[in-house]
Length: 343
Image (cartoon, rainbow, N blue to C red; front, side, top):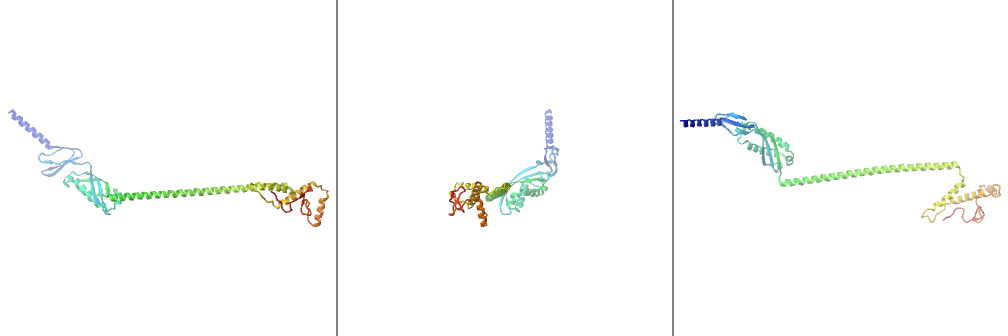
């Protein structure tokens, strides 16, 4: 009797345990589970402890409500200029309605992949290759808008779409590299030419400024030299006029400057100007006038002779009938009247 009671109690405990296991459902955070009763959707279990009717309600697998990331392999796409490129995309999405995600679509990840490939062909097909390579933000925005609208009825919200890689054909890559290299060489040549141009302009400007400054300096120097010479001449001229020198002194100074003419290293023969004779005459007359007294007769006779002929007689050396000049001391000279020769 006691054994039968123990068996009954064990069976009751087992039934209670099974009933509790089938009745209580614990759902983790950010998860959701749909419940069907007799094959029909009844409710969605929220995170935490939930109770269902055992052997009547059926709980389906959990659905992740967190944002998910799916990477789709390269999709072949034809551009507007008939080039086949491969595009890898990354999709970020989140399930917002577990019921729609479970009952509106069989496999929402595969559906998103297929609609992404379709929209890529539609968007890229209206662009050239260069626009495709430089318009990633535009393509991402267009794909996100289209996918969000299409997946809204599936209880899915597309948060972000990113193009991970765009792979043109090998021949196009080689052509693009050549074009890029040529463009860089062109920019380098332009920059080099611009630098040379600027250098030449700056050099010319510097030379111009230097020439202007040198000319200005030479002009100022010439003006100062001319002013100095003018002041020197004016001073000498004023001194001469103030001193009122005798013509004999001037003749003597003239004769003193003659030896300076022959001081050059290349001067072997030099000509004496005709004015030297006049200077010599004036010097000799000066010495003759100083040697003779004021009351002697020869000067007076010479003055009388000059008065008789209507000319002014000056003291000077006597001229012999044969054309020779007599010195003041009684000697004879061998130089003609009009010229003198020196070595």
